[in-house]
Length: 262
Image (tube, rainbow, N blue to C red; front, side):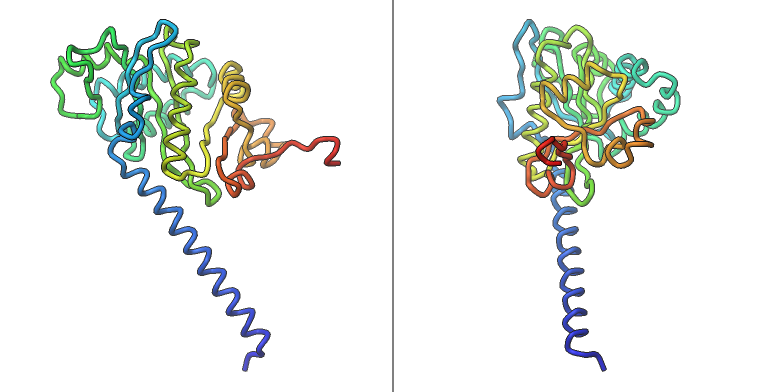
């Protein structure tokens, strides 16, 4: 026969397990709901177009499992052109991973179209797999970049994870990358994600400076260099994040110690 104290402890454990399960269920539901949206750009019409610094583009929506074959090839070609250098000797192995990632059903895309090279109606779609060859070719002519992201759970926190943000060289350095990341953060907040998370190669110094200096992302607590500084120093990448909520900040962000903290 259990004592009153033991009974109270068992009841407390059951309540805690129930709270944990309910929290997990709520987080999973947030991710499912966000992933089920057919077009996140609908809520942000002001971000459909970007016309600054000599760049005039509009944005379109896509899914990894619904891309035409020509768009798939474009995504791969731009990825290779921009990332083969930063990955160096790791690229052959990474290339296989990225080919799988880019066409996954969970992959969500924002495509950037050059207005000057768009079709007459101004809004060709890249998400329909059954396009005519001529339409597909027109899509490729007009695309000048993309963002690939997903809604995931990291350390029990719902996050928007940016897998790729890739732009053609002639539209880089024109404020477009910052514009796209601002949109990504708005999408994350609207869908009640706790943070935006992304991975940057250490050798990609310009990207690291862009995220940490211009956008104020920080090295996350889940990055290899934070999880295990000794082993993490050998990793070729860092995981960066920007958290929006207290719980996400506590779990995913690392506050550097200062002299006053010692």
